[in-house]
Image (cartoon, rainbow, N blue to C red; front, side, top):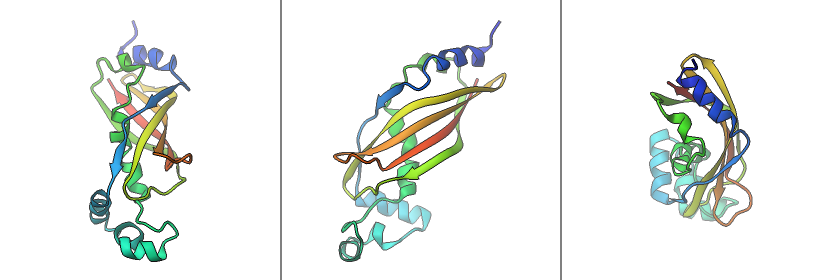
Length: 159
């Protein structure tokens, strides 16, 4: 008889390379950028000084840190309804495992809205209780054709 991870893997494999849709929009305001700068000790003027950024930055405004955009992926993907959510039945925990590929393709100007789209690329049984997922997450900027970032994230499902 198949265990919980093996049953989930069969469900997941039926959804490979299918776009899951987009999540909810999130506003990126200066307060959020400043808090991230404080947390990471990255106080570069392009992030925290609107007057200096307007004069010296090619973007003419402050922009979010690339790693702020990356760090928002768990929140941004939370509102995406996975078509394979039945695979999460009996799940004990889900943990971030890392990244295979990450590109910051477009800066996120202050007061922009971002959202995520996700596609399941791979699902692999790592041991009798663990599945590793590779998901492509694209973070879009409202009104722009080029995304803020594209990341291949690795997540472990533990049953």
